[in-house]
Length: 241
Length: 229
View (cartoon, each protein chain N blue to C red):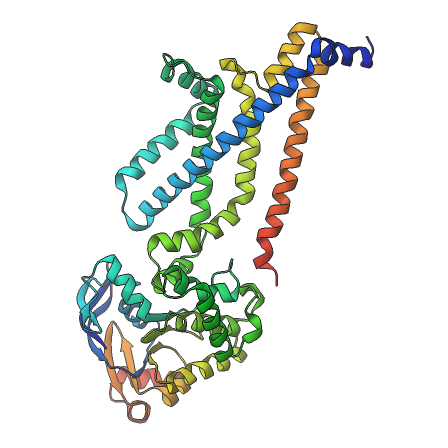
C-alpha cells in the first residue's frame, strides 16, 4: 500500500532521515518507536507529504506521490488520515462542523450526508452528545477522539498517528488508545508513532525501532520486545520498560 | 451672548445646521467606502505577503506589496490625499468625495494589511496542517480555517483602524470636500464664533466613536462563543 524507497530528509544541515526503505501492506498496524530526535515523526510526516522528502520516492497505492502535482497530493491526503499530537481541532467550529468541513468542502458529501456521518462517528468514538460543543469545551482525550473521528469522516485507507497520546493527561490516555484499538480491530491500516509500549505490544502487527535517522530493527511485537537484537534497541527498551 | 442665542445663531439661522448634517453624511460616506476598500485591499495584501513567507511563491506580488506598504505608511495621509487629487486626477473631472474615498481606502489598506498579516501569523501551524492533511488545498484551508480565526483575533485592531479612519477623514477639507469638520468650520467662518460649531463637531465624532466601539465589543463577544468552556 505504501512503498518507501531511499527516503531522506534534511532540515538545514541536520539530516534527520538518512535513507529509509520500507513497505507497508494493507491492514498492517505498524508501531514506530524510538528516542526523540530519531526521525520517527518526520518519517510519518513524509508519508503524507506534510514534510517534503529531500530524496527518495514514496508510492501510495501504486502512484508516486513525491513527484505528483498539488492536485494529486491533495487527492492522496484524502485517503491518508492524520492524527496530531496536539489534536489541531478547528477552535472556531463546532464539533460537528469540525468533522463535516472537509467532506462537504471537497464535494464528497452533502451537508446532510456529512451530518449523518458525523453522528455515526460521534457514536463510534463515544461522544454523541458533543455535536454542538466547541473544542474548547472538551477534555484532551475527548479532543483527540474527535480528531480521530474527523479523519475517519474522509473514509481514509490508512491512518497516521503522530504521538496521539503524548499531550494527554495520564488518565485520558486509555480512552484514546482504546479507540485506536477498536479501529485496528475493524481492519484499518495504521501507522502509529508512540511511546506507549503496551499499545505496541498488544495492537501492533509489526514494531519498528528508529534511531539516528534509520530503521534499526523491526519485528513482530513478541520477538521485538522479548528478543531485541540491536544494542541501541536493548538500551532503549531497558530505559522505557 | 447666551448659550441659547449662540446656538440659534450657529445652527438655526439660515439653516446652518445643514452644514453639519450634510457634512456628517459625507464623512460617513467616505468612511464607509474607504473602510471597504481598505479591508479588501488589506486582506489581499496580507494573504499575498503571508503566502510568500510561507511557500516562497508570489515573489513579484510580495515585492509590489512591500513597496506599497513602505510608501503609504511612510508618508502623511494629507499628502497622499493632495497628490491623488491634484496630481493623479488633476486633469480628470471627478467627484472630490470619490477621490477622498480612494485616498483613504488606499491609505487604510496598508494598515489593515499588517494587522491581518499578524493575525494570520498568530494562527498555530497545526491548524494549517490539519486542514491540508484532510485534503483541503491551500486556498480552502485559508478561507475555511485560517482566515476566520485570524479575523477573530484581529477584530479589535481592525475596529480600531476603522475608528482612526473615521477621524482621519476630517482632513478631507484639504481638497475642499465638505465633510463634518469642514461643515463646522464653515459655520465658524460665517458666525465668527468658534466654540459652538467646533465643540459640536467634536461631540458628533465622539458619539460615533463610542457607538462604534460598543458594537465592536458586542461582535467580539459573539465571536468569542467558541472559546467558552
